[in-house]
Image 1 (spheres, rainbow, N blue to C red):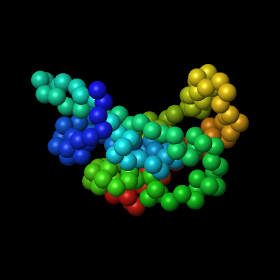
Image 2: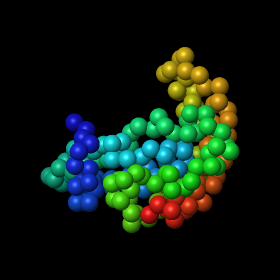
Image 3: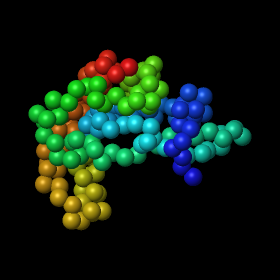
Length: 160
């Protein structure tokens, strides 16, 4: 059973199997323009590690991501870097985390065909979904991926 309650205790008590998810999620949210990260959209899944029950964290709820909603480059550029830092309690828990350099490199290395393929898969799942903005979104994601480290440094500077 995935749980949302007790997340603060899991993170602050060192009970997360993958505590790096929080910092990586900030990078991913910065890349796709998701300014709605909060405690309600991180869930923990119980996992037994060396006889101790811990929690594997998962990020959910990306539907407010600006790039994935067809928002243009100019509008994206107007969003303050601080907006990508998690809200309220989750933002406080994220303070002190460092920028995950390896994850930034993974985002920067994403190929256009991979991004376009993800949109193609979405079209297969949601056949009647309007993706007229797909080409523009792919280009914007590729531009943001190429500059992800700069974007993330701005987020950390204003958020942490």
